[in-house]
Image (cartoon, rainbow, N blue to C red; front, side, top):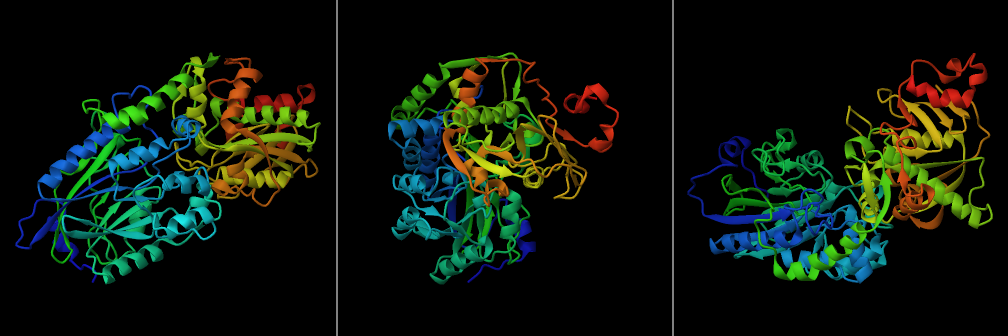
Amino acid sequence: MHKFLSSTILTSFAFGALTTTATAGSLTILHNNDGESQLVDAGSGLEQFGGAARFVTLVNQIRTQREGAGNAVLTLSSGDNILPGPEFNASLNDGIFYDAQVLNAIGYDAIALGNHDFDFGPDLLADFIGDVNAPYVSANLDFSGSSALQARFDANEIVKSTIVTSNGEQFGIVGATTENLPFISSPGDVSVLDVVSNVQAEIDALEMSGVKNIILISHLQGIGEDTAVISQLSGVDIAIAGGGDEFLADGPDALNTDPADVFGPYPLTGITNADGVEVPVVTTQGNYRYLGVLDVEFDDSGNLISVNNVTSGAQLVTDALTSDPTIQSQVIDPVSAALADLANTPIATSQVELDGQRSSIRFQETNLGNIIADSYIYNAEIVDAERGGTLLTGDATVALTNGGGIRNDSILGPGVLTELDTFDILPFSNTLTVINGLTAADLLAVLENAVSRVEGTLGGTGRFAQVAGLEFTYDPNRPGGDRVLELMLADGTLLYDRGEFLDTSTLIDLVTVNFLAGGGDEYPLDQFDAELIGISYQRSLFNYIVDGLGGLITAEQYAAGGEGRISIGVSEPASIALMGLGVLGLAGFYRRKHAL
């Protein structure tokens, strides 16, 4: 029952106006992804864009218009509707899932499970899903290891696929979740299965039950991943992607004024499934900034015969839209009040710009990354003193945090920092964790993972590390697993130099977060015993800025360009350069060598 149309025929009409004698059914798909609890507006400096209350208004306007024109209408989400941070913190403090109220007001027919939906672990996700009036969909997750989520699955609140009837037509919705879920979130004992085979099984089952029109909603972290999956699937007609934050449009709009920000047209064309049939692929940028509107037509056999490029597109949510009054009063007002309390609590002054930009934090050392990593050691040492020296038992203490856990994507200061800033920087539910007794070889393996996905001038992924208590040099052009050239502790102890371990006896305590200690971002740490110390990484930063630094961040302490903790490439082994240093000393050389 798969739909076989030649790619030649599709090229002539698939994404434009079409005159056809076939009896057609008109369908409008309203969609978004990666709302990520950005409920009030699009953020600082972008207050006139986004906002869940305006978004609900836009959904209702377009749904009413399309239904009035006789269209079937589906409303779909491709995942990551929630995200730890100050907005979701308001939900936890008030005992109300504000995000769930928004999802219910939008009126989704199906919601894909994204990675951030698992950031608080399976139990909280299960509680959240219980408040949402729409099925969560993923074909490639096995919930049998989580009693809370399995109960939701047994109650059909989580499904592999679902059938939605609109305007007398049946549509099959299949979900998919990234196979990287265990490395980038906290799914606990939820098992992640192969995407292609499990999605195909659901497509086949839907077609066997008589459903002709199949839509994939996926959270695979990028359109490139979706394209690879679609090419292996037979029977899929339309794909709604999530997680990549790609901007699809014919050109820049008021929010995206740089043409370089446009990833491609809406919808993307030229992507074919395993049948050779072209599949329109759409996505939106997140944070309730855009509503995707895809207008298509199917013939009686379930073949997609046209996409209306005149009416389709990602519509920008602006303050020209009147806020939905119910969501405004029941969600936006209480969340805004909670944010205002945080924003009105100054905690420090920075005399220097603090770089938390995604393009920096995932590729190179930054001063904000250094502050965060230093805060880990600061807090661990306080707990160690409180415990009589039983927490940090090694010869040296180092710290490491992943760039993906630093989320403000901006430069802060110079000026006042507030408590809200600490939540914007570090929004997740990560907790400080200590791993005792690492060797130089263990630490080298950790750092090799940290630089294993660094490519291009602004490349890199969330696993790139910001560090404290150590310095290292790496070459991104070397093969993976052989990129770290030098590794030295902050006291000047050279542990490793160009393939040679110079110190194998020093035992090192690593302070990190529980996400990485459990193997997140593929860090090789889950083989070691780890001890949680009961301090969130947000609170760690707060404590260090307020108490450790006395509320003042200076350029002398945290220079804008960093301190040389992480360097790219050297011309000669450090052991050779150290010859003849005399009274300068090893530690003095180490502090200076990267500035030369």
